[in-house]
Length: 332
Length: 284
Image 1 (tube, one colour):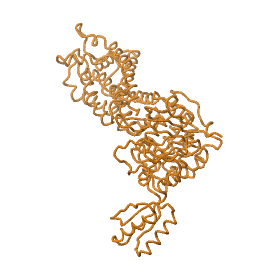
Image 2 (cartoon, helix red, strand yellow):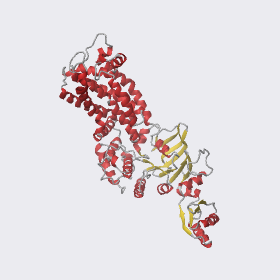
Image 3 (cartoon, chains in turn cyan, brown):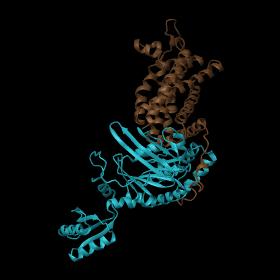
Image 4 (spheres, chains in turn cyan, blue):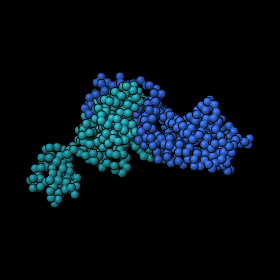
């Protein structure tokens, strides 16, 4: 069986004056899957989403969404997508219900069908009470929920979410994740951007890491973490005088040079063997009689992913060469 | 948020696609939004309600006594044609502000991700503002009746007078689209409206006959379309107007023809420029 792709893009380039927002991005998102585009601010995530959602036109390259060319058949694409931009784009002078009914009608549903659909969505997104209030009085979280409801008005085949959980409290974030799970179960393809590795890992089968308008790695979370050196083991010592010795122990056990944070009295290194490594570190520390405040195994942060992938922290000075390590492409 | 009924059916999403209903349907949906905006922001309607009535009262009772109509007749009746024309010029302001606000609120992006044409969005703004321009025409007519203004001519002439005002409003909508697309922010739109549109409506026969003005000012006023629209409306309503002398320039002698030329000219020249500027303003 051949895989069909809901989103395919080759060599997307976008310049704004002298600033290269996208320097040639390829994407291939199999139908019915979730792909996360992971990267720091300014990496080109939003530009990529805007091109795929027909809001911007690429200077070079080709893209199809739901089988239609974004440049030549934008209206066919628009009939089949939902877009939640980074800032909520709901009309502040309309009520929540009026917003959803208007969007339903502009998605060419009848007024009756649009009203029915609006009622459903308001209920599902816990906006019943606020439904007939003007949106300018909504809290940030409510506005965000309404914006997400708005993207689902026409039951899209492909959903683009640009940093969907930015600004949401943990509960709302978890709720959104649940909604996305169910959407994907029913066959919706989702492309989301995020700055959080844990979110990408939780939601997406495929993760595309971009920086400075280029794809610097792609694969599933496990493959990326292998690249990064999996989880990190972190020691926080009680007595700052012991930090040096603890760092040497950590280096010996993990076989990697730890990063040291002197004010925090901590040393961190990749734990290739995960729990075994953690136990070995604990054993070595107690043998050396070093008292610790905290000894933990945690997921690499986005900073650490970038450090491992590019050899520099996010947002370094302009750096145009393709990074040396490149995870073998597992999609497309 | 239990996420059960929000979802597409398991068998796929294709049958949810709706056939296009056409630009008229989309325009009407966006017009309804525009009218809701007017309802929710009565203060934004002041240029179409309080302001023209304020001008009528101000000029009729405060300055009016000092202004003579060379041909004689009631200043209050002279004044009405001027304020009708002035108020219609401000239609451009309402359109420009609407477009600038859409950009500021990023509603533009939402519209652009929908299967509708750019024309429907502009059309919605245009129809909204055309309807909005009827509001001051009705309010001012009532206010005029109270202070002693009357339509002294025939019914057909009067209807043509009102029709001219609506046609002028239609032309000003394109000026508004151009303005709203070229000026970045709602605040900027307010500034341009006050600095540009406002003086244009004063350098005209709005409040005083052009015959009483000196040199260059008189020439500018005589060729200003606001003058010709105001004068044409006075003629249609058979209200007092400056007597036309044989030596007067063509626009003063033929206010209706000159007004129509301007309306056609603005639409033919401004509309394509405005649409191009609008497309540019919303694309990235």
